[in-house]
Length: 219
Image (tube, rainbow, N blue to C red; front, top):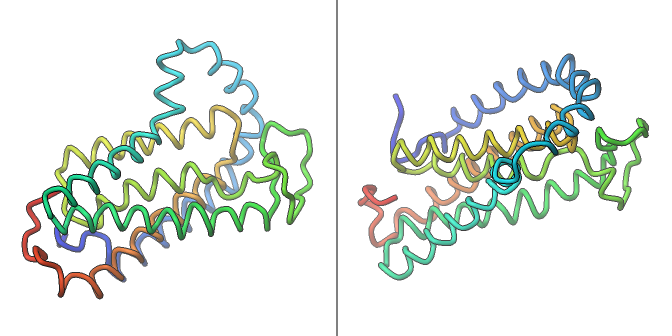
């Protein structure tokens, strides 16, 4: 049964996320990467013919997560609502640990060329952005934003909107020929795991001392 207070921020949630990611990664490795390699350039060329508003929706949907969690934090501080501050805090700490640290280290360690390059050889420890395909940082960011809303209480409609923004971000990375399918799956997994682990830590260390920990009606 779904626990609205903890959401997926449990060991079972972590295990389920890992299992799903493993299956998706296998599919992406066997089939998805080949599809991107074969059609990525064609997709990117077609994408450039889209109306500018449509291009903006795909490219900048991720930015809405940043504004949302910043607004959540400001509202929480202004109205002294610990649950809002905590939710925004999970996101920002997850950003620091996952997107700004783990993902960037892995990008440089693997040195995978992006799909639009003719170069097929990986260049570990490369400092060039063109060889920072794996894992996808945008996917990690968007997954983190969605996962936080699945870890803590949030309205269904907000989770649906977050899921849509996440989907737009992931699709954009593929159709603009920026990432392979495995890059996107790996980034998504890191984002979800980061949110779950930070939310579990918050549950363990913060809830007992929070002034409104018993009130989960806020979002």
